[in-house]
Image (cartoon, rainbow, N blue to C red; front, side):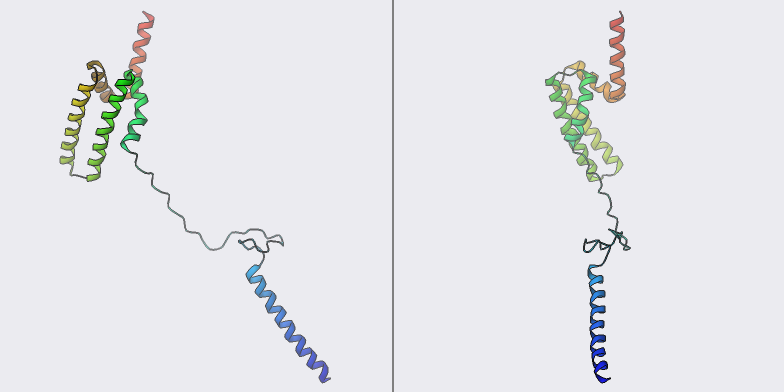
Length: 166
């Protein structure tokens, strides 16, 4: 009987190595692993129980003066019926002074000082536009600033309808 006990001790030891070896393999390469090892067995990719950190959405970058003006120029051109030269003059002047306004906002001055800076910028912009545009286009632009682009376009359409009816 001693021979049987010796062999069974060896068999138990082999059985323990096999048992611990397979559990180690399952722990590393087990079913349902999100890394793709051994996804057989029908478990497939499962969600991790560890919560994932939510990345905050990036704040949209502020538009540059050029982007702001280029975005509005088609509507302004339509409303004022500008030719290419007038459009180029207006666009360059607006880009210049919109950039100055953006720079003034970045400084975050007190409200009284900010109003003074804006007034100064507007005054210089008006002088430059008056010198670069024909008088009727300049006056139309001032009215456009007062009324807004949409109202100006509607007024132009109404005027065209009245002229075509007469």
